[in-house]
Length: 290
Image (cartoon, rainbow, N blue to C red):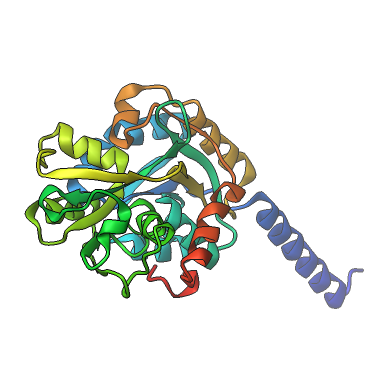
């Protein structure tokens, strides 16, 4: 006869083994929440990415919910608390997210011009008398979001390399988005500003800004491009399917909203350059809003 104690122990062991198996398998939700960068209106971003939604639903056999948070900070927090499963971060916002959620995994970066890198521009109003970064001394500079790579961290580093310290040699304003920086420079509200080269090029092509009123003063070295990341606690086979879906993505219509040619493999170590740049600028990433 099996005693109550033995029977109870058996139930407990069975529950423990099931829990262990579940943990080993990882999370496998029926619906994957996919967060996209909040760099335009939410409705526009979601509409532009319906092709991505359909592609992932067909390839993964999951329902896909596209998510656009209010800003970089809320996107980082959503990933931290597992309210989203996949996220498309800017390089610096990824580094910030990784510092708060060490388990998240970058797996693919945007490829443009045949490379998984891009550059940042330092621009100036043509009437401001700025021909090189050193000429920004005494002027006002427009940066984007505090967590922006190419609209804050990198252009600030360009000025640092020219011997200029933010808040000492020039004043600055955070204007939120790249296009807001370009418009402010064009209008003369700030004399100089920083933003990504791809966005600047896009704004010129769309005639959102007038290149006759803005000049490019400097261009940065290559920056590791925007990464796709996944929750580390998802089931291994699901993570592998997600990675394959992005690395095998070839449809130009799906890639167009990202201004991408494709996506290439990438690792966390590729973003160490941003951590080193933050140290150069004496920026404590644990205190950056995000």
